[in-house]
Amino acid sequence: MVEFTLLEDDVYFHDYIADFIPLFVLSILLEFIINVFFKKKKNYHSLSDSLNSIGTGISTVVLERIVPFTILSSIEFVGAVYIYKHYRFFDVSESSILAWIICLLAVDFVYYWFHRFAHEINFMWATHVTHHSSDKYNLTTALRQSIFQMYFSWVLFLPIGFFIPPGIYVFHKQFNTINQFWIHTQLIGKLAWPIEFIMNTPSHHRVHHGRNPKYLDKNYAGTLIIWDRLFGTFQEEDTITTTTTTTTTTTTTTTTTTTDDKQRVFYGLVHQFESSDPTWSQVHHWFEIYEKQKQYHTIKEKLKSIFYGPGWKKGDTNRMGDLSSIPIPTEKDEQLRIKASLSTSLNIYLFIHYFLASFLALSLRSLFEDKIGSANVTCSFIFVYIGLTSFGAIFDRKWYAMILEHCRLWSFIIYTLYLESTNPIISRQFQIISLLRYIYFISSLFLILKKLSPLSTLSNYLKSSKKLLKLD
Image (cartoon, helix red, strand yellow):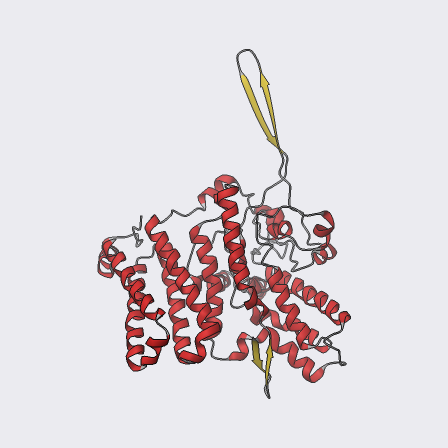
């Protein structure tokens, strides 16, 4: 349920996004199988990128839980609902078909403008940049969300509360989010032209995620692409065609391949984001704004660095910066962005523990809070977040990664033993805890056998000037 408090009473609405989680998971698996095993498009996916995207999605759920004020995690709903409850212009039936249509258009219209502001105003880009930080483009990218975005977007949706009933608004707000999941894929090409003309499709959204100069700051639509067509931000995805000509003589064969002037989409940020840390992915642009501020001395320049586009710098006449100075990406450039892979055994280790963290977070959120208590659930969510941080450190080969990982494993073992000793009912009702404790113990032994114990890690760090782990 979507639930929040409107000062004098509690309000409950159905959580449609939670209903779609199993479908999201199945779709991600199906897309991976088709791309890798049937279409042979292995470069569409990488384990580290996909797990980091999933981890970022989980981290938003975890951090919402850790935030002490319930109203904050429901802020995108509570404002408009409160306005309708107390200040609506007139009564509207929740069964009104006209109200449903108007709300669909209103929510999508407001989303378009928030999304545009989030790309064209630097401090708002800091609340959205997380979603664009992946160099891959697949369904897991849809899960890579910012925890800050809702705390800035909710204000723009407030006017809807003056004329749209809460039930209709909450449904369409969630529908707008759910509908944007399926467009994060390269598996679906261009659709029939009436759909492409009206709706936001995978083709249109691929453009939005492109770092090519011609694709930057385009196609902000949520559900309907008509807003981009109306307000001048639409960009068609180029269809790449290749022409091959072969000339044969008695002695030589010459093959000439030519392509037109069109560009395929290269994904990610103009300046690559290389960290797998879930916290840094959420806050890094705030630090970049701070560093940018230090370069300027006048109030006017400092304000421009905050309210102009993220690419603006002193001397630029365009508030979005000089896009002509951004190089067109190439295949070679994309290859340089690929990280060195970890060993197969460590990749399997991380895959298993990402799965366990995901399972723990989602099951605790929906099933077990009433049984094990709110405080224990919150502690468990903090533990999950530490895990996501540890996994990111391993992917990034941070010197402290294995120290943090062993601390994570043994804190779970010790805490659950303590919990069961003080509350024997837990051990009887949740036998899975004993199984997880065994898995964590075996995991710690596995890392030690791979010479990745805390002591050996610390010793290697003290001997090394690079401060990176040798995890191959």
